[in-house]
Amino acid sequence: MFKQRSHKKELLDQADIPEKDLFLNLKELDFINQYLGGYKITYSALHRILHAGQTYSLVDIGSGGGDTLKRINAWSKKTPYTFTLFGVDIKPSCIAYSLTHKPTTGVNFICDDYRNVFNHIPQVDIIHASLFCHHLSEEELITLIRFSAAAKATLLINDLERNPIAYYAIKLLTRLFSRSYLVKNDAPLSVLRGFKKTEWMDILQKSGVKNYSIKNKWVFRHLVIVYGDK
Image 1 (tube, rainbow, N blue to C red):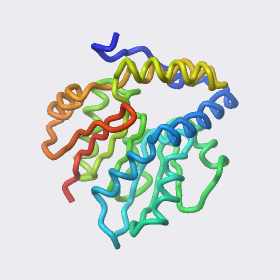
Image 2: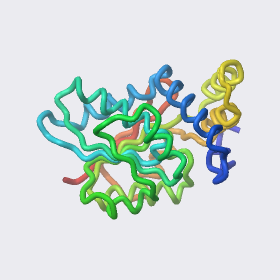
Image 3: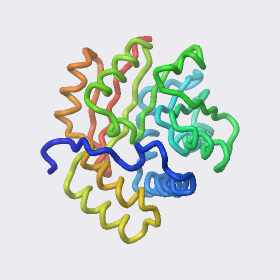
Image 4: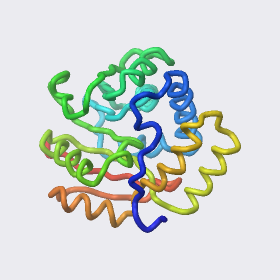
């Protein structure tokens, strides 16, 4: 079952999730990202592409509970980098959680499809997608990459490698420690919806972009950077 991506939809992709169940899911995802090193992958990518003294407009698409942006905001205060930060998510309940759970200044949230982002802000330098792309089909991924290229923005993708060790490890950990039925179902399924490096190469080539990099990261992640033309 690891040879090809699963196309089974996650529970999180449903439209009618009870709010308290969704909020618990978002809280646990933040914990998983923190303690399995997911945020550090984003920090390392930003270090690679940023220049001190400049201000960057960064949009996190599929921003979920907003914790990624809040952590980027806190991290940036220890660096020479300056941001205007925006989170875009199509689910109103995710935006509600983002605005009420550990609210912070310097982070703005938009409830909309990411493709409408320029209806809300004039310029985007960096499009960040963490644990978002495995929710998309190949055609939707190509659309995202081409959208970023058309905007001349640098696209940072931080997502899962489809790997049996990752699958069985997260299945065991969530069974033992998670209180969320959404996390218990979706975390291992997310791995099955993840990618092989060769699949990323194929998707990027089909998208028509030329300037990109793909790196394997701990723990069972890929960091994909599609460099913008600015």
